[in-house]
Length: 340
Image (tube, rainbow, N blue to C red; front, side, top):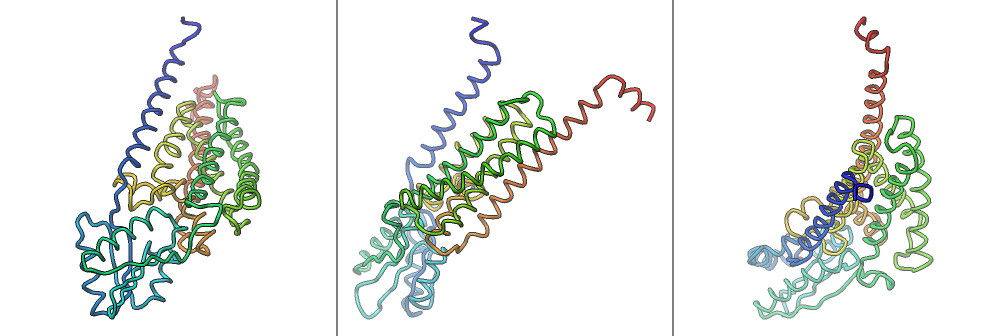
């Protein structure tokens, strides 16, 4: 029994159990009951009609949408394609039919939720609603989930590659030199991963056509960020560091990313953390690069860069500190230090 199940193995199994339960709690907590909350929408109408329409929408129970007024249809369309709103309603004060504009390539769930709110509000005013999707997903990306799954593959590949480097040799003693080599090794791996992902979603499956080299760059940054964080946490905590990496990227990052349900449909906790983690930032950057000409990508790119830089800094600092401690503990160094 002792040979087959060591105390260390028991601790590892307990850690796996915690991750398993956390996985179930996180995904089901995020997805079990999606409800719209302050989905950003705009209302285009003459001022006399826009002001009461905005007031009615913002007064709906539960605040499903957050409406603001814009001057005309052109401005509403521009905001929608720049990813500054999830839907727009064009009110015709001379008739009884209004037009709802959506861009479902940015996330069909948010567009559907906003459309339903407009339809309910229109029925209360005895008005009809016609929906126009001005930027649908590509034919091979019918539900708009390809961006999420692409980023999911990149992040998992990044931290598993860093784990493989850690386990290959010297995992018990991640010296500064080894950490630097592992971080350097992540660069070509990340670049090849970026190319591979872009080839699969582009020429192979045609689910995210166009922006090939843009996707390569995003993939390289995403994979390297995941790998750098993996190197850092495993340098700090060994096997536990791998568990922490899975917690950040898979248990917390994936359900909050906005890939399946956008932030406006998630509970408050997941809504708050989603775009601060690499899966959420990466999914946003991919969608907005492929479908919306790169609008609203600066913030998410900075998030990915921050995780990459933070991983490098923590990995190098922890390895350097450990090397100093080990040098100070070697025989003959203590007297010299005392003399100094």
